[in-house]
Length: 253
Image 1 (cartoon, rainbow, N blue to C red):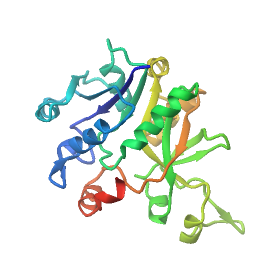
Image 2: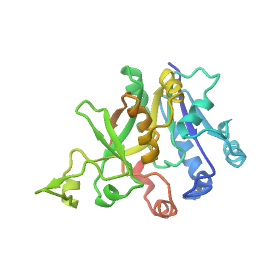
Image 3: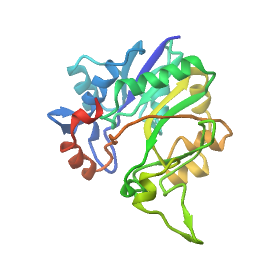
Image 4: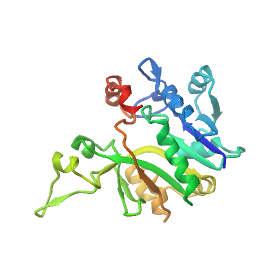
């Protein structure tokens, strides 16, 4: 089984333009993600997928394998699919280019479950310990069934605890929770399912939440979700970028 990590990187982010080339610790976000990908023990190849020459030029500077993809790609997953055309890839990990604090062992966790279970798709989550993350729409929440498959992903606070007939949740509840998780922006696909995914039309839930993984659930397929310890975060806004500049790098290694 040939295993690829694909890092989709888009320059024209609406909330943080030029995001992959913004810097933290004197390194671009793109390079930080690439460094982590290269440390995976189970990967065979790492490629950066983009449609922007500025990102291509930056990636070439650190000797990355870059594939120029169609500007018509609607999502990072569509870009991953475009990037592996003509390549012998059996398992593809979509490591989003705005997750600089992802650890290599998290990537390998996904490769391992895809190698050992008959899965279409897998991703990661981690317990939420801060009520501000729980209520933040930029932090995607996921609810799991008892077998570790996703029931739903949302930007809203889910599950929403009801106390004495009223909707209520506290920081104490968050700290003691056993079912409140945030989604981590990394996916693994089988080649067969990735090719099926890109033929599916965007669905109502995907459009409503602006979450591409909901296309999978609405079409009746399952996503395995592994729980891991992780206190990093993705870079989506200027506020995230400023927070990252004071975030201890040691916390994610």
